[in-house]
Image (cartoon, rainbow over all chains, first blue to last red; front, side, top):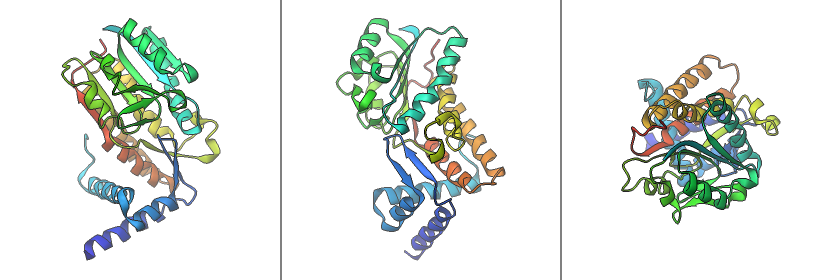
Length: 69
Length: 216
């Protein structure tokens, strides 16, 4: 449980390093700000969990090499 | 099936307008290479035009740009042009849908019991970074450019005659190259967001059906 909390903090730190005005467009027509992404991670829920899972895969790929290389 | 490209693109709101303009390069490539094509843009991107053309001309390659869901790809104003009720018209086709989540159920259904077809799409929401100051001129948005390149690599590869799997592999390879490029020129914090979201899209890219299907 402690490890999960540490990972969440690490991912939050990574997201907080993005510029505050960054805008993320979704193909569904919505858009998200950096702070909204951070809030989703803090609150949990499906999107928060999806962001955490994808960040972990991304960080692992940075270490082991990206797929399809 | 006929060696014809059918491309649909909606333009009814600012985000979908990005994808609309990304298709310019694909249309230009088809023109430059004398590839027969039909483009339904804006209000012409509707179900009636789509079905009439597919049933009468049987295009081998379809590139669909619009909002989507697990069982639908939309046209103008998000009115469905393809869903579970007319997905059977795709038999024998190669489809690339730049559309959220449609690979999850619709894509699988499109190729069911059909060894000739393939369907490329995204299993979750397709995402990209935008510069709000460039929203009115999507092709000048530097933040969105790597996402345009990634998606268009699939389109151009298919038009070049590469197989569905080769097109996906080439796009992912180009995506990896872009991630590295945006990593070594990290003069702007926004590059961190670009790298991560590009990786995310690459992970969500899904191919159903025949991986060896080609436009030739």
